[in-house]
Length: 540
Picture 1 (tube, helix red, strand yellow):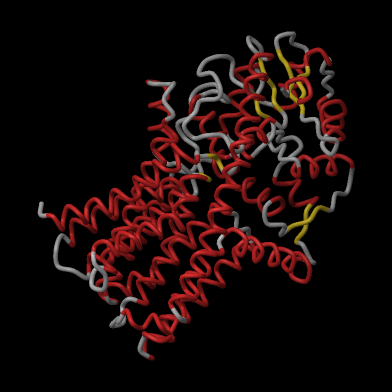
Picture 2 (cartoon, helix red, strand yellow):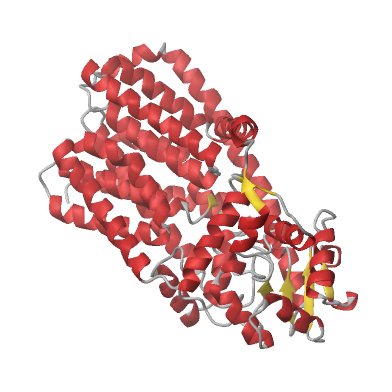
């Protein structure tokens, strides 16, 4: 390996690794939502009768692998290690794409500086504020771009296409819809990179993987899985997207509506498909009112959290307007318009949390660079963006604001992690040797570290009665294992009479009326105060 090849290798592989170490060792890594920690509890068998090897809607194949690793070496944080390795691979692929794009115009040091700046501005959040959805979005999009770029060359086309296909398949298996979304975002640019005929090979390979995988899932889907998926979509239409509003007709439906709104989804006698048909209707005020509110929120979020990427893409847009020939300028502008409408559409019609917005903007930044640099470049064309001193001053201001945002987020997340960690430890001490029924504990699972084990590897499984996970088929088996019945209401009734069972209840006044109505009126379970764990008793 000659000096230049070694420098390229260190730049492409070393810079993402340096960022990974900077974040995990220096700033810290934290879960964006409670989803990841809930998944690890299922995989480890801490909230199931046995380690869950099939999560049905996502982690196809990966769930079996992770559950097996946890059974063999329970103290190792396999979930964080495996997903961070895949996230690292995604950033390596994106760095390779950018390095190849910049090579005709910049020397090694300048390319190193550009890649380091890109990783700090666009990649840091993915390591620091982690959610599993970031992995299939970034890895799926990066695999397609890398394959398309290699198709434009002459070396190793078949080998790179195979490796990229494997990477896309790995991303698709984690969350199929996220990988398909990434493919849709980068497909036009993949064709742009390598020409329509060669570029579409990478796109077609990824599309075939998604199509074949989707057909395989559809053919192997059980009635239990179909019901799980249907209820998961129905509750998302209400709680996440606000596409439906409630209109209960009787007290039982009113309690069911409140159960859906509180994410108490496991009681099939209360929350079922018939409830959604009877007690919910399309939101007639969605577009005049709800959509406007969501549009304002998503615009504010993008400007607040991703101002550095928006500004960078705006500068690339100005540069591209001057550099691109007219024949390529309008297709590129249509792509930018479509990308913007996609972001706003996701935020208005569905939702656009950081775990979606961050990766999509990262991919769009790489795509924008790829398109702009397809035109013959002259670095002196930078004068079209403004005087160099003005650009330098703008960079200093943006860098300062971005640094403040990162440090502020780190301080907030670190404080939440410390508080949630102490609360989990106290809950475990009070519930030691007992069956813990937890209603609302999932709020404590946010901001935890992917590389720490907060819950003991052994002991009686916890029964969580709030969250999307209550729809998972493993929860019926857990209730059967703990109480001899799969019915949630009957299981709670039986547990309330057992001296070895304790109940965790949230302290918030807004949820107390629902739990009184659900436990005492619907379930008819009298839970003694002595066996109730609440937040004031366990907070430090």
